[in-house]
Image (cartoon, rainbow, N blue to C red; front, side, top):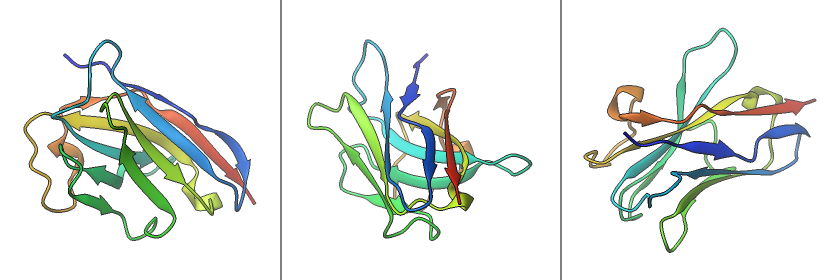
Length: 126
């Protein structure tokens, strides 16, 4: 079992930036593919960004390309989602997800990840 904890969400105005963090307390995220997903009220959970186990492949949803950046720190203790130029339609609960066996070669699906955090709320006001 892998526990994941997200942080960094909040209430911001349109155009602002936020950086979300994902950590697995007590362990490293090295060797895990990591994804960020989000779910707005009344909508299905959707893919946002993902990074491969060694960080050589990254994928983004079209809606966030050029605005969001996923990264891993050198010690692989945390994975970040830097979000810029935030828009009201970015409002959602953002979830971190990891999988030890996923070979990230294309945009992943929700079902590709085994472990999930509880999410952090991001609210963007007009």
